[in-house]
Image 1 (cartoon, helix red, strand yellow):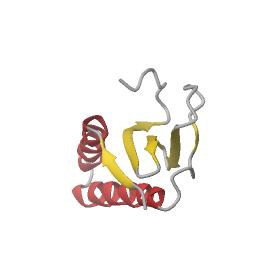
Image 2 (cartoon, one colour):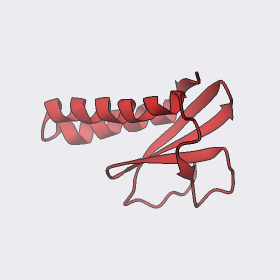
Image 3 (cartoon, helix red, strand yellow):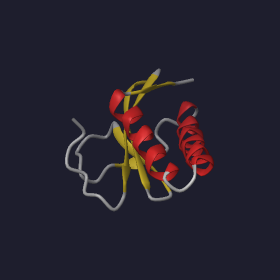
Length: 97
């Protein structure tokens, strides 16, 4: 089984998503974050499940689509995946740095 590592950027993205949704409802903000985390947990058994990120020419950087969000991750090796960012699909992906 693969371990998931959340980068500081991805954790910041989760906080920003929570804060934005919480403007209307803290309850639904919590549910949204929980669902995003549940979506990423499928990568533990199926690390190559996501599609290639069209803007990046690297077979090990992939994404899962969850509602309006792109969950972008990097397959480091057969034992580790780094969650890089949670990106709203309405925004243009400029850089992962």
